[in-house]
Image 1 (tube, rainbow, N blue to C red):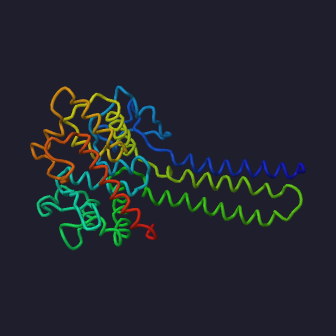
Image 2: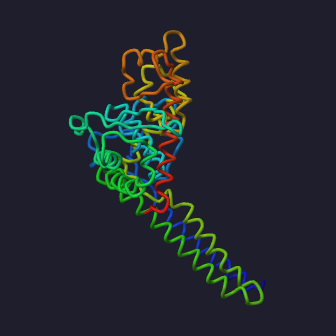
Image 3: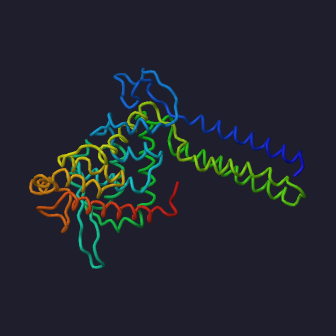
Length: 346
């Protein structure tokens, strides 16, 4: 390569790096300007804020672990990754079931085992639902109050998009994000896609030239891929969103590492599904109650598990057995959503 070619590559590299850094730097989250940004002030709208990078060390501060979360587990998933995933739909079902809105049944069919959902007391319980939860229930229970999960596979894809868009819009209305998260993610991906197309076009123009001019296009291509990779972190949380995210993460850490008792098993089960450690949560609750009767046994005997019906969970079931059944349902529902949304992505 000639000196001019080297200078060109260096110059383009610096320009691309500066542009990418500028875009990434503008995505910093907002935090409350306090010793613990995970605490929401009495008047959050008037509280001082600062813009910082996400700092996970404060989230896992062992002295500040939380045993509850101020947000629903599906919203916590959005706060964690700025995107709604099929898993979040399964988390929503488990959360609605634990709260008494839905019943989950494991049923036998001619082709094997399936899952059925029953909408319970919809007329009396509708007041306790968020807007996205109402839209979700309307999407699932279109013709009947009972539905087989496998029967949702064909038509749930477009409805999934409606539910996730309602959740995105609700997160902005609730003051958790500065702008619609999916719009910001898509915006970054568009920049990245344009950069990839532009770099490929530039490569096509320069590849026939002798020498090292073709290398000028490589920094552009690298910058485009960097934007694509960063896109899932493009959404800017507000100070309130950051505080609730920190609290939620502290709860997940507490559930995995903190001192627990089996009394919290059922209440926190949806968060275990959201965190991806459902069976581990069941085992921890069993271990916490090893000195006495299993909490799951007490729950089942007291008919508190009326939201779950499975031949594998009866009187005397352990927390681990209940968690295993719930994880089986969540995985099945997640797979249904993935299958149904193919070709229906926003």
